[in-house]
Image (spheres, rainbow, N blue to C red):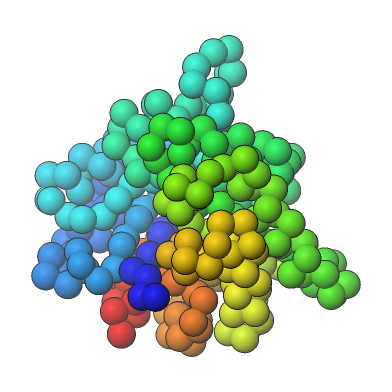
Length: 258
């Protein structure tokens, strides 16, 4: 089954509002309405304060580039100082949110249960989740990568029905390859992404598993993107550093069209 590639830029904690507007405008200026809008999906995930300014630029230019959040809380409102709710990002015009990024898990103690609550809150509101899963170097060295990652997938989608799950995306991000310049080989990445798809098939059936997109999220860049995207179970990228420059991000988008 042919799946439309998705190239998603995770800006992490980078770019003031002014810088975000400039970067978004640079991406929009290179948007090819005749090609990109049909054959590749494009997403940027700026910091919360940049979401509305970035969305305004894209809407004004009529660029088919979606905006998503980097994180979200599962309660719709309440005494949760510092958190952002699903209704808040939905009102801005976000299509989705990243959930369970390794930095959220490692630095802020988010559990599989937290990730699951966030997935449910998003799909109940009509948004989709980009569910991040991945292993540490210690887990890989133990030879437990696929077991560990697939357990994360099962936990993230626990209690999520097939219609909602089908809208979501899974991003495989080997923790040892994020921000280190190290990248899983295409063969290593493919093996794990294939195991993720097999787990989705166990949960929701083969047809749904073949519809759902699985991204690679460990230091994808212009030097390795072609080899990674050539793998049958890698449907795009969740990109960090390479999404902070319009020129490199656009090159990754174009790689999806080759």
